[in-house]
Image 1 (spheres, rainbow, N blue to C red):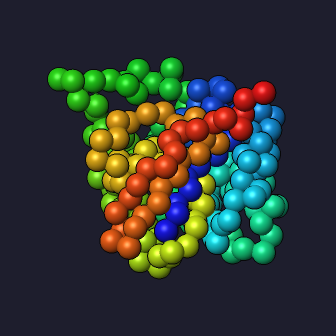
Image 2 (image 1 turned 60 degrees about the vertical axis):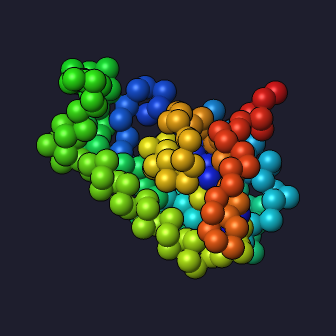
Length: 197
C-alpha cells in the first residue's frame, strides 16, 4: 500500500492562534491557495481512495484534491479528526495560562482530560485502530489521508521508529509504502515544495 498523508490548509483560526480541536475551522485565503497548489501537485498521482477528517478545514482541502480525481471514492472519517481539546477548543492558546505548562519536564496532558478533552492514549488508540484497518482493507492500494497535525504526528510515530515529532506544515506531503509484510518505508516527509513560488 502507498499511503499519502497531508495536513489541511491554513485556517483563520491558525492565523489567530486559536485552538481548534473538533471545531470545523475555516480555511484562510492562504489556506485555500495551499489546497489548490496541493491538488495541482497530486493531480497526476494515482490514487484509489481519499479519506478525510470530517472537519471542514480538512474536508475542504480534500475536496480540492478530489476535483482532479472525480471517479475515485471519497470518504469522511471521524477517526481522522484532530485531537479533542475539550474546553480549550475555541480559545487562543496565548490566553490559557497553563496551555503549555510543564511539570517535572512532562507535558501536562492530564489537564486536557480534566477539561473534557482527549488523552494522548485515547487519540493514539483511535489512530492506531484506523491505521490497522487501513492496512488490512487496502493492501496494494494507493490511499490519500487528509487530517490534522496532532493526528498525523501520531500516525507517523506509529510507523517510523526513529521519527522525531515535527510540526507538519499546512498541506505538506508525507508518503509511506508498505511491503507485503505491512512494513513501512518512508518515501517523503513534510514536503511543501508545491508551495514554493
